[in-house]
Image (cartoon, rainbow, N blue to C red):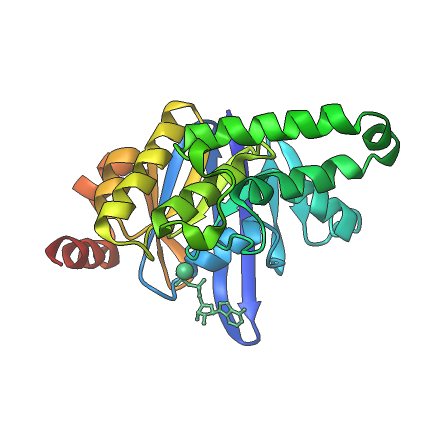
Length: 262
Ligand SMILES: Nc1ncnc2c1ncn2[C@@H]1O[C@H](COP(=O)(O)OP(=O)(O)O)[C@@H](O)[C@H]1O
Ligand SMILES: [Mg+2]
C-alpha cells in the first residue's frame, strides 16, 4: 500500500519556481533516496512534506487520507497542520538539538508537550505519563546505541552521536515517515558510517524513510527507490538498482558519472 502520495506540488519563492509539479508515491516500509545537484529543490521538497514550507498548490496523502490541500480551508488551519505534521519526522543536516537540554530532555520535550494538550488526563496521570515517555526515550536511545549518554548535553557529544540523538528524537512521536536532509554531510567518514548504520537498522525494523543524500553507495545499496531531481522536477524515479545501473536521463548519467569519479 502507498503510505505517501504527493500530487502536483508546486512551490515558488517570489519568481523562482523551485518545485514544479512534483508527484510521486512511496510504499510502506520502503526507503526512498533523493539525489540531485545543489539547488535542485531537494530540501524544499522535504520542508514541504514536513509543513515547514507551504506548497503553492498540490495535495499530500498519508495512508489514503488527504493531509494537505492548499485550497482546503480546514487542512490549511494551523491547528490541523500541527496535527498532520506528526505524520513526519525530520532529521536535519546540522542535528538541530536543543543545546540547553540533556539528551533525554531533547527526546522527551515534544512528547511531554503533546501529552499536556490533554490537560485533564495529564494532571490526573502525570507520573504514569512521564514514566512512559522516559521509558520510550530510553529504549530509543538504546536503539541508536546511546543509552549511556542520556544525561549528557549536546556539546559533550561527537557530531555522529548528536545525529543519532536527533534520529532518536525524530522517532519519539512514532512518525509514519522519517525524513533526513543530508544527515551525514556535516560528518567525517568514520562518523558517517555510524549514522548510516543506524539508518540501515531502521530499514530492517520496517521504518518508511525518505533520505536526501550525497552518499551514492548508500542510495544504491540501502534504498528501494531513488528520485533524481534536477531544476525543480523529478527527472528520474525508479527502483534503485535500475536508476543506478540503467539511468535514462542524460542529466542523471552526467550526475552519476561525476558522483562516482570523485
Ligand atoms: N526560504 C527560501 N527563500 C528563497 N529561496 C529559497 C528558500 N529556500 C530555498 N530557496 C531556493 O530554492 C532553490 C532550491 O533550494 P533547495 O531546496 O535548498 O535545494 P537543494 O536542497 O536541492 O540544494 C534554490 O534556488 C534556493 O536558493
Ligand atoms: Mg539541501
